[in-house]
Image (cartoon, rainbow, N blue to C red; front, side, top):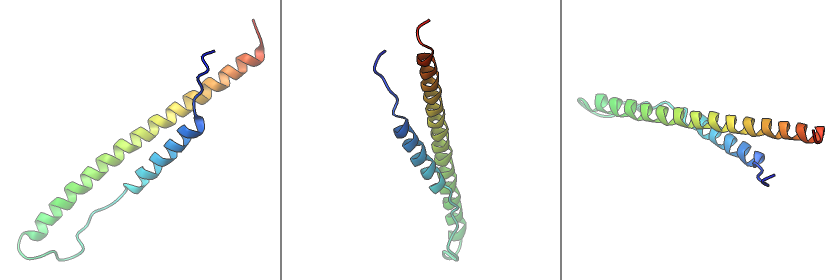
Length: 92
């Protein structure tokens, strides 16, 4: 045995924190009303749309990280369960 042990509570905490960040990044940008004369409204609209697109991409990246951490946790849980099962079986 190597003495290595996965920190399952720590992994679960990271998963939870990433999920919370992903949820917090679900936003919609809209102008608060009339932003000024001429083309200013259109320019602000484009800027807000670009900002929203960037936040949406960031949210997708964080969501993907969350899914990866979830898979890591599940894999370690399965390995721990398998190791415990084999240990319970005793020597071959």
